[in-house]
Length: 467
Image 1 (spheres, rainbow, N blue to C red):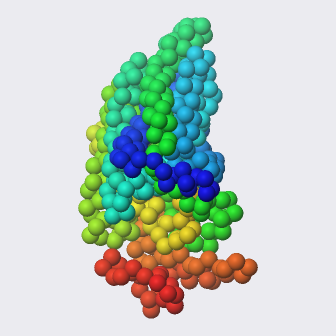
Image 2: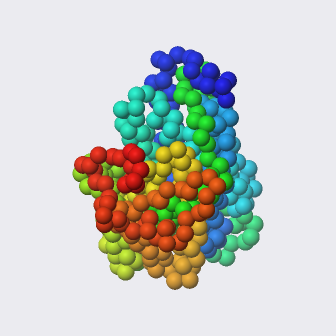
Image 3: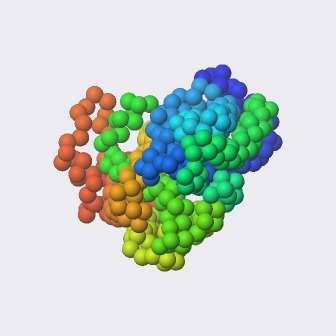
């Protein structure tokens, strides 16, 4: 570790703006690549005649990576440092993108799932390293500005991605099974259409490998030392007695699941005659407005969150998303389509706000809490499967009630944190764990010691403890 620290203390500080520029582009690249899955879902469903539950295995294969690779990514970061971990993540992600070539050649659905899983492993590595790396690339006072800039470019990638995906992936339509066509004809048509699926991912792979080469050239540049306090499975498990964190982890799980579910079914939903009746390419392009709303909402949210309690803002947005999903479920035509697209606007602040609320006041346990919250992104694998199963049995409109229910819990969590839901102290080493009564007490607002608000000094959340 000492050798690593010496290495990170050397180099040319003037290269840090270049590193920052590359990291900002990195946020754009993984946002662009991740959201292409929304275009991939309707295409693969048509190519392989899949049910909604079956095609949601695409999201399952991708988001499963967050559960499996979040903590190992911390180990890699502790061994290699920031820049080299970025390089590894880029190469792994590019490898996943290049696996779309044999998947398209074989025209096999499991091959596409493998490619997505490998791509997710690389993105998980990048996500674990990116936020703390950008925060450290400059003065502490401007860290929030740098992170906001990076997140804005990530949102830009998720806004442009569906439009490009619609043009390159959905232009030929989604159904290759012509009536009375022979099995050989269907197989030939499937290979032709599968070839178009690989194009955007190959382009992304080339860009990622070029970016990895650029980072390799800058590997001796000055970069912050990596904290020795890294996440581990045992340390993460020890956080189970932190109600604010654990309930926030559930909120992250459900939020990501709801967001991904809506983005995944939106193209097929807008194609329905009872909604907008659009062709696949036009419906896919409208998904850009769903993700673009999230980008706009982040700028609005940054202003609002400075003036209102984050928990109340989170609860208010969750109420709006719940109502919009329910309205879309029970209406038809433009009302159904517009209300579902509008969900993206109120999705915008949910992930960063929930993440911040759940990890607040963790102190030295912050790396472990962050790892737990990153693992909760696996909700993007589980909830879409449930949504797909409901869609197969009861239709897409009814399936929208699944993400609506997810948003209900996020509203509850926002209210709980606004009322002072606190994380109890972890017992010291060698002492017994908290009792159920003590955990419940930690989840209940303390009337004698009201929760801190933004205009009060930030001290310890425990009255009998030194700040």
